[in-house]
Length: 253
Image 1 (cartoon, one colour):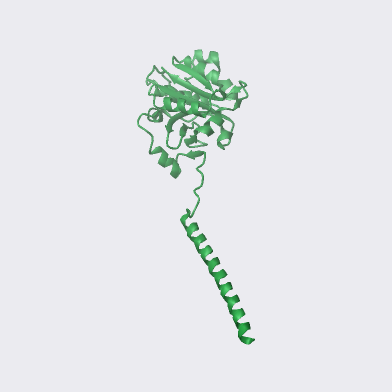
Image 2: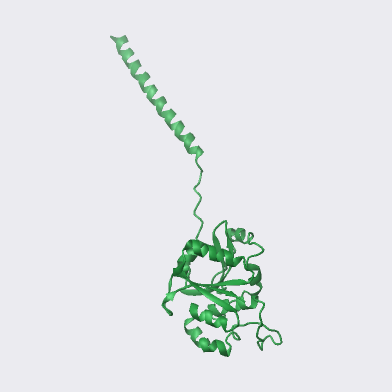
């Protein structure tokens, strides 16, 4: 009887050992599979990458020689007050173009567009400096003021283009030496403080699908790389002054 009991117990122990062995094998297999997976999951890149960040430095190192950036950067200026973003953007582009420039008394006898001499008598017929100080400029006003300086200007509403069309427009313009792009967007869509804003597009990076904005509010933000989907959302917003969508203005001779 004692031997029989021991035999039963021995069988139970053997079965138990097999179960333990199976559990260990399954656990070991799980550990092997787990080890084959990446140790960390890469965080999604932010929609906006700023100029001096590590990612921003990598992007600026890829700016192609034919991008508008190289023509614009010598003339990139800061807005003189908190509503002159449109004026500063226009002046940046006008100075980069090979056109006749006015002489500002401050810089005489040298010809140079400033945010003061931008307001010629013809421009003032469209919009006065005081009105811009009070409410900024709409897309239509931007087009009209630029044309008063003898350049061609056309506009595209943000609610009239999808991501694919916007990407094609930006990519083509950035590689065209004779064309520049002003962008009117809503800061909130970029996760920034403020409302409607004007700045200048300077480059497109196909690898990351981002456009570079030279932000004329230098006291607030450094130049920023924005994904095309985010840029489209930012321009497909309502300008309450004109009751129209924000968007792009293309400038050429």
